[in-house]
Amino acid sequence: MLIKIPSVANLGLQTIKVDIEINLANKGLPGFEIVGLPDKAVDESKERVRTAIATSGIDFPAKKITVNMAPADVPKEGSIYDLPIAVGILSSVLEFPVPQKSLFLGELSFDGSLRHTKGAFLMALFAKEFGFINLFVPKDSANEAAAIKGVKVFPVENLTQICRHLLKQEEIFPVVYKQVAENIPAPVEFDMKEVLGQEQAKRAMEIAAAGGHNIIMIGSPGSGKTMLARALPGILPPLNEAESLEVTKIYSASGGIPPGGSLILNRQFRAPHHTASLAGLVGGGSKPQPGEISLAHRGILFLDEFNEFPRSIMEALRQPLEDGYLTISRSKQRVVYPADFMLVASANPCPCGYAMHPKKNCTCNPNQISKYQKRISGPILDRIDLHISVMPVDAGEFSDNQKNSDFLESSEKIKQRVVFARKKQEVRFSNQGEKKVIHCNSQMKNADIKKYCKLLKDVEEILRQASLKFQLSARSYMKMIKVARTIADLDNAEEITVSHMAEALQYKPKYHELS
View 1: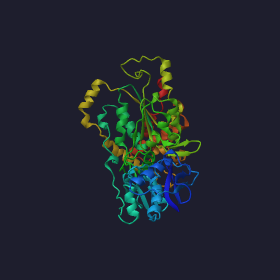
View 2: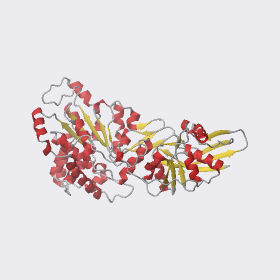
View 3: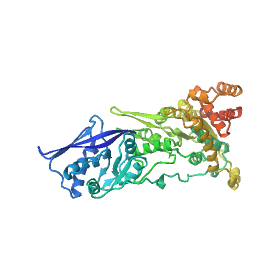
């Protein structure tokens, strides 16, 4: 007897249909085989399915069982096929029909219950796109899938329950989606008004947030670089619906959505340590998984002590910083993960950290300083829009600022200006079409800059002179225009003026100049 149960396979963020073909033959010795490029976890489904059926009080059929996963040339990975295999076998034993336009996904425990399984959100997106109506997934994964409207998600607790449902003895009701509190934006670690002094740095952070620009902070230890970076999420605009779907897809594919989880609504702040591996930061492995770069999509990737990261990791940032996505190629698989993030980096000016300090003496010689700074290559610095020097706050000034902290601007007030600037950009780029989506100024290409950032003659002359004086590259030249456009948006100005360009030029690349 041949039975077909539809399921899916996730290849990166791409989802394809997989037909689980189950043949139960009376001829031949009893056995259980799985074919169709299964990995070790899929092959072990035999024991999980056999034991789960037995502990559910159902006799496992003493037949020759062959399971084929089609298409046979696509690798099948993970434990997600336990449920469709078990349902196929049980439909033969208990003689119930498999519902049409339905997908099955889930990992079985030995007692017949279903465990939380990653990829339910991707499965729901696939079901909606290709006309599947019913999804049968573990109860802990149901809310994640129910975020997609237009499909019925049935939360399955165990094999007995789904058998009774398919035999029409006891109905499983579709789950009603609920947004869980864990994925609602929570208070950030620091408020901008807690950062005493550093007004220019806070202004740079506001510009970075308004335009989605990359930023690097150079300063001595204790000057407030890390505190500024960790306050940045508090002034970022919330994710819109399209961005939320993009981020949730990545976390669903990586297993980052917890049991009972829902859509991710807050921009992610990822801060890997400088000892992180290349695969951990960029992604990869024999079965390519998203790394910190992709997990920071539409959010912030904070690299503290930027100089301490291995050169290989720094250079791996080139493609995502330029293109907004990351390609991971293996001999048998090639996956593309989105990686459009704000890079926030902090660095010391020298090994001892005090080359820029107004009072403490630097103990490094010029060669040490030069070698240390050049651990960050020119091409990487060229891809960072805003370069700021963070000077330490004097103790007396710190005390005065602490007394007047109630009068400092809060993150919420700065956020209002950022959201206003982002809305201007949203209106500006609203006619780009489906194939070309621009969310903020930093994503503009040269053709977009020419179209949306026309410069007046005096503004263009200032930029030309600065380009000659500071030997700006073509990329840095264009980045200055994009930064100036963001400053103009914060001022609610339709045209880029001389003052906007002058402020933008304050943030030109300067790190290697310190040596």
